[in-house]
Image (cartoon, rainbow, N blue to C red):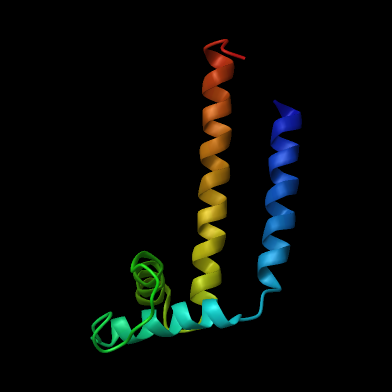
Length: 102
């Protein structure tokens, strides 16, 4: 169990260090811009258009609405998602250990 915790901690630290050095790429900048326009009341596929499905724009809209209108809000949302997925994995592993399924 200690090794699993150490592995997940190292994995999360490496993943977060990579994410913190990200610059806005063309696609992520587009997603962020569309999220901003959606927060301003624009309509997807009529006022603003891209060929991708709407989910990624809604996620960015929610993160911008929740954490403020800047690039750090998207990164903060990704950090939160990585953290919560790590917690979920640890909880599932502990459940498997308690039920002796490993």
